[in-house]
Structures are given as structure tokens and as C-alpha cells.
Image 1 (cartoon, rainbow, N blue to C red):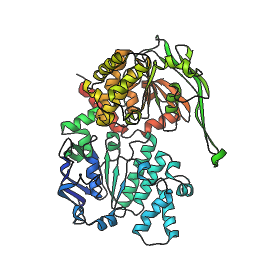
Image 2 (spheres, one colour):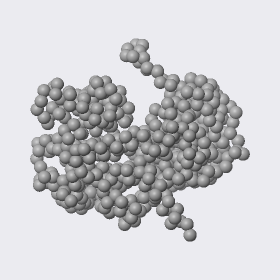
Image 3 (cartoon, helix red, strand yellow):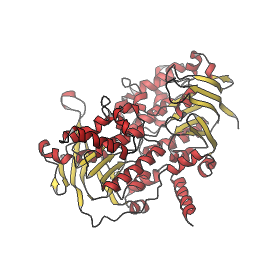
Image 4 (tube, rainbow, N blue to C red):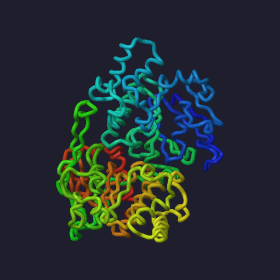
Amino acid sequence: MTSLLSIQGLSISLPAQADRRHAVENVSLELARNEILCVVGESGSGKSVMSRAVMGLFPSRHVQPTAGRIVFEGQDLLQAPPEQLRALRGNRIAMIFQEPMTALNPVLRIGAQIDEVLEIHQAGDAAARRQRVLEMLVAVNLPDPERILAAYPHQLSGGQRQRAMIAMALALEPDILIADEPTTALDVTTQAQILQLVRDIQRKQGMGVIFVTHDFGVVAEIADRIAVMQHGKLVEQGTADDVLHRPQADYTRSLLAAVPSLTPRARRDFSAAPVVLGVKNLSKTFRSGGGLFGGPARQVDALASVSFDIRRGETVGVVGESGSGKSTVARCIIRLLEADSGEINIDGIDIARLGSRELRPLRKRMQMVFQDPFGSLNPRRTVGQLIAEGPMVHGLAADSAWARALELLELVGLERRAADRFPHEFSGGQRQRIGLARALALEPEILVADEPVSALDVSVQAQVLRLLEDIRNRLGLTVLFITHDLRVASQVCDTVAVMHRGRIVEFGAVADVYANPSHEYTRALMAAVPGRHWSEHNDAANLNARTP
């Protein structure tokens, strides 16, 4: 194998107050031309720091290489002067970042941002560069390239922004592409399109690709070789077939075991249970543009006559792409958004038209766990104060509310002393546990969970899902679970509603819908699950291993 890039004994230090000495410790990897190397591991494993070191991008002056070499075309990039690195970035070595909305300049049009890369690295007139930009927008399958060229980042969807970033990274046909979690926040169908796009362009141009991810479905879909990192160290590397089917390291086996199965669990019978939440003909339309601010008027039917029932103790999942209306359903039910029409019945009481004073005593019966716990937790209040706040608002004495907060911290697997700490002092998985504790503080009957594990590592995700199931069974909760991850839905939900363009196009037991989807859109979602064939093979192997 001819090496395109060689990482040799790389170590990168961390600040003195960090929980370990090195972000990356003695890592050695080889990347060949025309190869996709997937680097996997949990948050904090050092995979992103290692990959960004190739570009000379370090998060701070306290995080710097202390040993090793990164060799490209015979030169150590760690010793290269800044002007040489600038010449390589975007030209010979390019990068796709995880969050395009953060990486793209919000005040520059998409076309200008791609043109900037061309202008810096290539001579040529503006007309030739503009034509190249349009060619790249077509190459990444963006609709209406002329419109995209003139658009600002906020005017594009998440998948379109990610495609624009890929166009920017590939505009100069680099030798090496580094993709840092480029599909983590994308829907399953958009994710499948992006993965196919990266693979097609990589084969066409013969690039070497370093693909950083924690999603083993993605790994199974595109990897030629896999490197597994833990706590800054390389614990295993090999061909995709060897690592996925014959892992050697205990850590790799634990990561693979934590991947949710696509085979649905056995459904519990709720036919005799009473309906706790009934949604009937719920509709919501969003309007923008026109009026005082000008621009073309736009109308989006986010919900169109949505109806379903949830029975006591049941978990109903709502799945679909971004923009399908699933989060709008959750927010209308919880009354964070006002529906235009329809009914939301809790034990026969229609709460859709209740005023705030009438609604207040009913709010404690239905609580929400948000997708981003850091964004939903007040950073200026301690965890104990955040959990105790709800019960106190509803009349519970401060001492009793604090005692309940301490009990709930233990219930979600945290220590009581965590009550005196602030949200930023916890990991993502711990913050999600805090969000769950806060939602349970009012002893709700219905829990609405909006993508509660989508941003978590696979092992932390498994822990939170087990915790949620345990609490649901112990407290008899009824759960509405919003997700775009069909693997998670298969393990969490009893019933699933598939949403598309504001409508429920399929509703039924998870096992029935997954085994025999009746709607074309559901079939498209199932077909787009990354690494589906590997998942099915893995599920069958695990079943055989358990069968005496």
C-alpha cells in the first residue's frame, strides 16, 4: 500500500487542568490514495483533534503537538511554516466540518465563499471561477445552482449547507479530504445521499479520505479501513470487514454491542389500556415573507390534520426527516406552539384551547425532554435549582422540592453532590440525565422526548435509553418519542408514526411497520438506513450466539 499521508507517533498535549495529559497519545496511522479510513470513538477520544492536526488546526495554544510527525509528500506538516500550510489547506488537503452553519460565514453568499477558495489558490478571471463554482454545485447535486449561488447559509436546509461545504472542500480536487462528523445531524435519507456523494467523488478523483464519526452504520456503509480511538490512544485498526465482524479490542466490541438493533423488540399489548393522550385533526401553518419586511410570501403546512392516540404506559415514536413536522407535533402537544386547529385531549380534556391560567394545573401532567440539554438548561443556575424550580412553581415547599431534586439525581444515575454544580460542568450524556430529572420532578403522566439521544455517542446513547426504559417501567409513564433514528425507534417504541410533509403516512406496531412498510416514503426511509445490511448480519449473529 502506497502511503499518501503518514501519521507517526503523534502526541498532542492538553492543558494542565484537563482530566488527562494528552488529547492524542502516540498515534500512528497510514492513509493510502483512493482509500476511506474511518476513525471512530466516543467524544473525547481524540479523533477530531488528531484529524484537525493534519490541517494544522489546533483549538488553542494549550493544545499543541509534543511528539511525532505528520508526513505528506515527504514533508512533516508539523514543522511546515504557516505560509506553506495556507497553500496546502483547501488546495491539496481539504476539510468538511461537522456543523456547516457554524463553519460558513453567515454574511457572505454561498457562491462568494466557494469562489474565495478558488481566488486564493488559483489564478483566473471571475467568470471562469463562477463557472467552476456552478459546476461544483451541480456535482454535489444541489437543486437550482443559480439560486444556491446567490443564497446565504441561513436560506438553505441542513443537508444543502452540508453539500455546499462539500463543494467548497472539493473545488480544487484535493489529494486528501478530512470529513469530521459530516452527517451526524442529518436525516437518514440526506445522510445516505451525502455518503454516496463522498464515495462517488472519492472514487472519481482517487482521493484519500479520513472520515471521523461515532456512527457504526456510517462506518459499515463507506469504510475501507477502520481505526478505533479511546482516551487519545489507538486501540484497534484493520480492514472494515475485520473490525466490524471480528473485533479484537474489548472497547471495540463494547461500541459495536451498543449500536441499537434494527430488529424491533417484542411489542407490549396496550389494547386494554385507556387512551391518555388523543390528538385529532391537528394542523399548523407557518407563514413568512411579505408584509413590512418584503420578499415573497411563503406558507408551509407544518401539520395537516394529524391524528393519533397514545394509551397509558405506551411509547409511541414519531419518525421522519427534518421538516416532516415531528417536532412541531411535540411542541403543539406541550403547548409551546399554538396549533391553528384540532384537539389535544388529555383524559378527555381538550387542552388545545385552554387559556394559560386554565392550562397551568395540567402542565405538570405532561413534561418535555429537549434535544439539546445544554441549550435548555439555564447556565446561571445549579442543577439542584433547575430540578427543584418546577415543583416550587406549583406550590411545593422549598425544602421538599430540594429533597425531591436529590432523589431524582440518584434516580437518573448521578450523585447527590451534583446538585451544587452548574450545567457546563457535565458531559453531554450527564446533561441529558439532568434534563430527564427536571422533566420528572413534577411527576408527569406523559413524557414528550424530542430527539433526546441524537447528539450522544453510541455507548452514552445506550445508557440513556436503558435509563429511560427503566424509569418508564417503574413510574408507569406514557411516552411520545420523537426521533429520526430508525434504530433507536426500533428499541424504544411500541408503536410508530411515520410523518412526511406534515402528515402521518403510516401508523402501527413497530415490528409490523419495519417488517412490511406499506407506504413508499417508509420504504425509502428503511432503505436509507446506513449500514443496514451489516446491522441485519450483526443482529443475526447476536441471535445465534444467544440461542443454546
